[in-house]
Amino acid sequence: MTSAYRQLVDATVPTRQAAALTGLSRTTIYRKPAAPVDHEPVAPPNKLSDAERAEILAALNCPEFVDLAPLQVYAKLLDEGIYLGSVSTFYRVLQENEQVAERRRLATHPARAIPELVATAPGQVLSWDITKLAGPVKGKYFDCYLMVDIHSRFIVGAHVHASESGVLAVEMMKEIFGIHGVPNLVHADRGTSMTSKTVAALLSYLEVTRSHSRPRVSNDNPYSESIFKTLKYGPTFPERFASLGDARAFISGFVVWYNHDHRHSGIGVHTPANVHYGFADSVALKRSQTLAAARARHPHRFSTTTDPKILALPGPAWINQPKENPETEAA
Image (cartoon, rainbow, N blue to C red; front, side, top):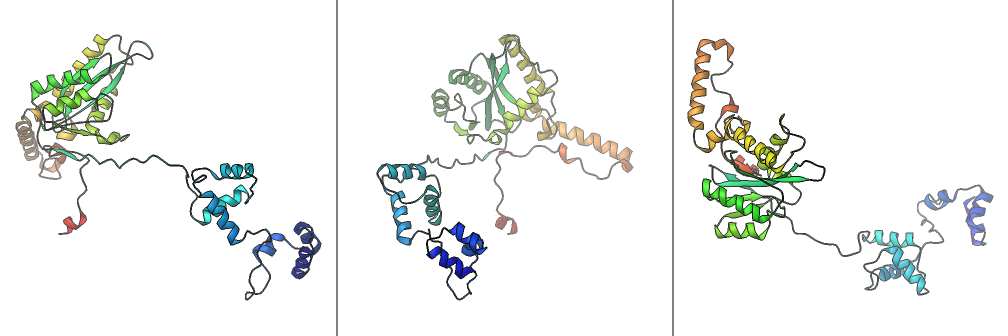
């Protein structure tokens, strides 16, 4: 039956009609030829030659068309009276040559370095950010500028203004540095105020190293983001502030509570003020003595003779602590 089909096709009978007359499927004939294995498979009659494929590839890659989509090239060639193949054929030729990709020039951006910062004591690394506080009406916001010491988690400054600008940020930094001293490094994200020339000029003049988060990576500024979550998820945080004065009063009260009353789990459940001003050691000793006395009175209620790990004094504070090399650990 296959030979009869071939004869009909050679006699210029349409393949669909030849298949119907012989009772064969064209798919079976061309994709799964019934010829013995030692025979070469029969190529479809509409297959392009190697020279034709090379001509299509050369046209697609010529300087005039190299940055155009295949459909654009197809139309332009037709306008010039040239037909080399269908749009699908153009794509198949490109795929065979591993060139199915964006043909236009694309913007390239250098990889951003991951900020790896460590503070072993208060006053070394400060992190700051700005968050929006909803005003009295929809669309009205106040800007809360907040700076924190990443080692002690102590909020060294928080200002609320009606707008955001680098000038206001510089005013806040001058006040903070005058009270708490000039740090070694200031870290922030890439907001307009954080990257402003006024902030850069101040930090450069004071010889303070600047550090910025990678674009769209909030984890690069975790301490500021954590405080903002504590602020806005608190039970007393209002849905809106009636005025700028109300917002400033609320933030002022929050800072006092956070620094002096809030026991922070990241610093041994101490208050940021105790860690920042060096009182955490005496508080930790008193806690340990209290636990020891309780353990002596009721030893059967304690499974260990050591204090809970969550009460341990804080160690170095990291932003993106680098992973240790496995080879170093093995050694």
